[in-house]
Image 1: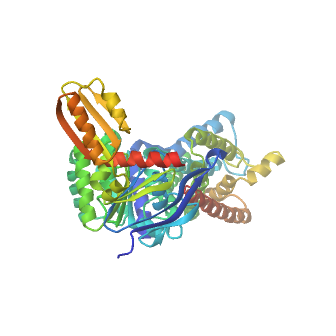
Image 2: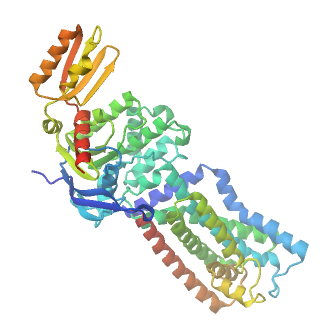
Length: 317
Length: 253
């Protein structure tokens, strides 16, 4: 097995903002990321995702524990780590007074790349991300969405082995988001390692080979999507469309202790944790109470898993 | 790689500054404007002389104006940390393959170039328009002093710009610095006839050291032995400020 791209061992980060109570933003986190994978770091707001990324990208020092990127310790060899990484931070980051093209060229220059080949690459990247028409405009004259595009475009100007993306799709339209996801997949196929955090769980579901769910700075679950689904087996989402919603729907559904029930016009969405036979029994019972126009039963989505696991973890802590 | 990285920071600063030609123009000519308006005004309306034998006020004030300009460039450059923070680029740059010290050095290098051009333009026009008897053999010392002092003041200011996260708070600190450093110094008047407390404060002020060296470099007045001590003191001040500013940047983590 090849050496990991990233190794994190018992990582702890404590903050004490303005002399108030100590916050354990990261609390004993350990994981490895294999080279060439797309690794998703998921968790609710304040879970410790961005702090973990800040440590891995040498912008924050851990209180204890260790983290390595391609064997370089983030505390002892930060410059070596920075030579291996490209980072899209959560906040917008672009030089507002420079043109889009200059933003890309200057960024490449910081990574030791300049000359005709880099200018040509900038043209390609701008073409791929729909920035050609604004190439020579100052970033300050562009909308928030375009500014984010410029920020993400910079990552495609260099060939570093690891790319970190913190909520990369914020402010992007769906078409561009899809394009960026394709480019990220292509990068991973070339052997690059992508580490991303996102609140949009369908993104992670579509992109990630390996997912770590954290909450309160601690690991809640880790594995690929299939492994995570096994952790929450027997979690089903049932969607039923009636010509008229049965009057005793609530009473019937209540017998199955649903996790959530939503009624929207004549459509009922139920999430429940039951055996498959009980789920079919529920559908059959409801079918006797009203005419069903459409029925859909699916296993847990990443969102279901995420909600289930993080809520469970919060209850425990 | 490290030289290239330094060049990248410098290029970035240059490109950003070049997008505002009015800013560069003002940087280049404002010392002369100060000399013309303040120097001539004080000279003509109040009949001030420098108090030094054979040196009129314009000649005396030239070194003060050069120091003030270098101080101003350093202050403006350190303010750009706030601009970088607002743009988000500050946090991104901390992930670029460069040392924190290179970030600081690169940021000041372009502005040192501006300060050098500014000093030469000011001295040339002061000689041509105000007939200040500028010594050509003092030009190398003038340039060296401009480089070290602009960098020194920038590193000094950077400590505060990096530690103070609020733009408005930094502006207040900046105003206090302008008031304290510029007025408690030999910029506007000779120190010999001042009250003792004032004189001691002025001699402890690094901008007095800078002005004394610049005065020696431009018009050849001042005590050579004292100037040597002041030069060494300013170099030490610059090194300490550089170390402290680098530490402040590292403490961002």
